Length: 172
Ligand SMILES: [Mg+2]
Image 1 (tube, rainbow, N blue to C red):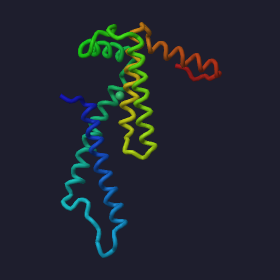
Image 2: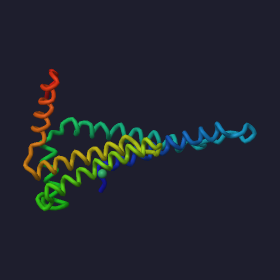
Image 3: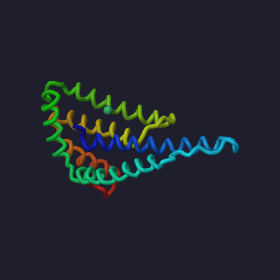
Image 4: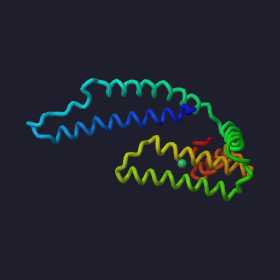
C-alpha cells in the first residue's frame, strides 16, 4: 500500500504534468499560423476536471501532512527512524558510523544533483528537492543514533552557540 506522502507526490507530479501540457499547447498556439487555427487543449473538459480533482486531493491531504509535521519532534523522528530501520532494513549497528555517514553524504549529493538539473532547465519540482532534503535529515538522525548523539539537543546547543558568537538575541 502506498503512503499518503507517496500519493501526494504522485498527485503533485500529475498536476504539474497537466499544467505543463496547457503551457505547451499555449506555446504551440502562439507559434501556429493564422490559417492553421488554434488547438483546443481540452475539448471535452476532462483535463480541467482531472486538474480540479487533483487540486482537491492535494489541499485535503497536504493539510494532514502539515499537521503531522507541526507535531514532529526530534525525539519522535529518532524513535520511529530506528524502529523502522530495524523493522524493515537491518539492526542500526549492522552499519558502522562510516556507512551511515556515507549514506547521508549520498543524499546530499542527490539534493545537489536535483538543484543542478533545475538550473539546467529540467522539470524538477520543489517536491523532488524536498524529498532529497528529507533523506539527508533522516540519514543524519540515523548516523546520530548510531553514535549515541541526541540530535535535537545538539541542534539547540549549536544554534545558540552561533547566536552567542554573533551576538544575536535569537535563540532556541
Ligand atoms: Mg534520495
